[in-house]
Image 1 (cartoon, rainbow, N blue to C red):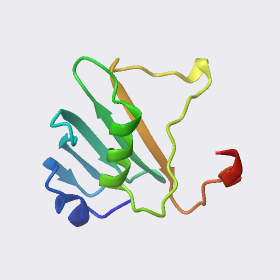
Image 2 (cartoon, rainbow, N blue to C red):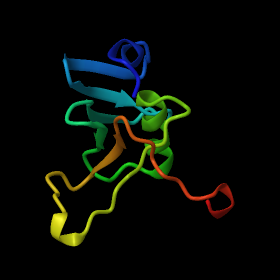
Image 3 (tube, helix red, strand yellow):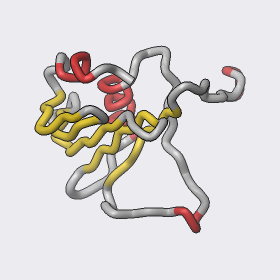
Length: 112
């Protein structure tokens, strides 16, 4: 995950609050739409959540989020947990995750 200083350098990220393990604010997508964002790097995970008021972010919007908060060479995921583990606090919020100190397994390029 990018450092707080790297995140702050992006003109499309408005940091409202920042602490030792993350922050919160707003981001602007290339289509000028504004979304709420919360990011953290505590508990062994890098994490970004993005929410809109009336719909979930699209794949292209989530790709923009990945570029804003993670480096090009980092592999991140949007998890689909077992039904019994679902948590849905906001109906239009999606998350990107990356474990710290571990390499994310990926399928062979030909499969993707």
